[in-house]
Figure 1 (tube, one colour):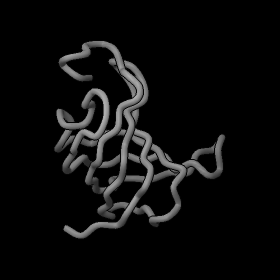
Figure 2 (cartoon, helix red, strand yellow):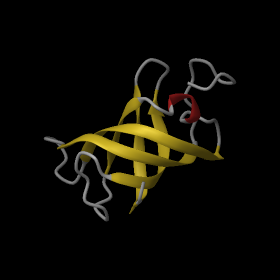
Figure 3 (cartoon, helix red, strand yellow):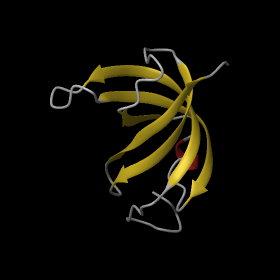
Figure 4 (cartoon, helix red, strand yellow):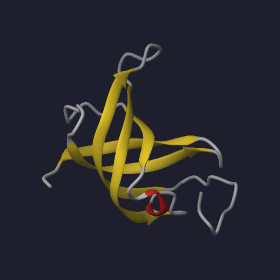
Length: 102
């Protein structure tokens, strides 16, 4: 949650992030959706409120429909992220995934 917007997630919001995959599972309801837990390593706001910077160094939830990068535990990647959800619970939708190096 952004300090400037307490309690409210605002769309659109986008940022560029660097992440390390902690775990990945395939959604039972949506076969093309991958649900992730990832460590947020870096973030740069692009549009709207910044929901990522305060989470750098933490493990967060996310999901993607992007299959351009094979996601397994330990993989480093860059992505565009949009925070979806509310003040207490939400996740980052990842797109434009690209493999990265340490």
